[in-house]
Image (cartoon, rainbow, N blue to C red; front, top):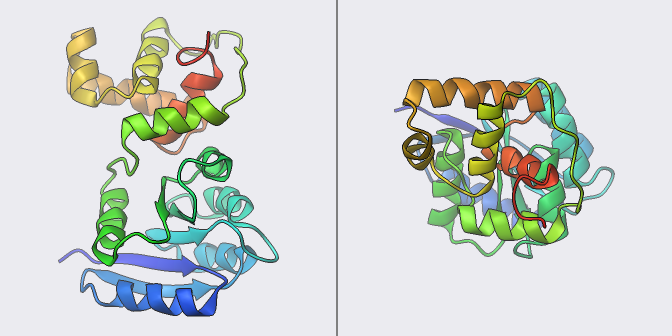
Length: 214
C-alpha cells in the first residue's frame, strides 16, 4: 500500500484534534506533523515535505494564503488543500492563485476529507470544473493581458479549453491530438506560466481574457 504523508495547519485546538483523529484512522495516511499558524506550517513543509497539507485560511502569525504561497516555493512537491467555512469566496480564489490545489469546507464528512487527500495526491482535480469556473469568474480581475509570445497558438487554444473546464479527453477530441501531445503542451504551459496545476491554468485563462470575460 502506498502511504500518503499528510500534515495539518489549523489554529483551533479542538478542530485540529478532531481532524488529526480522522486522518489517523485511515491506514494509507501517515500524519507527519501539525501546525497552529502559517509560519509553523511553512517550516513544517520545508523540513518534512509532506505529500499533502490541509491548510486553514484564517490563522495567526501568517495566514493560510501567505503560507500557501511560501510553501509553493520552499516545498513545491507539497500539495495544499485549503480548509474554509465558505464556498467559492474570494479567499479561496486567492489561495488557488497562490498555489493551492483545491479546497474543502470544514464541515466535509470524514470520508470526504480522506477522498479529497487521495484525489489531490493522485493528480486529480479536487474542484469540479463548473465550481472552479464560477469561482474564478466571480473573483478574477477583469483584464486582458498582452499575447504571450512564448506560447504557441496551439498552447493558447489548449489554455482556453482548460479554462472552459474541458477534460483531457474532450480537449483531445476537439483538437484531434494524442494524449502524449496534449501532455507535452500542458507541461509546457505549466512551466511557462509558473502554474502548479490545472486550477491555476484556469485562473490564468480567465485573467488573460481567453474565457469568461467580455
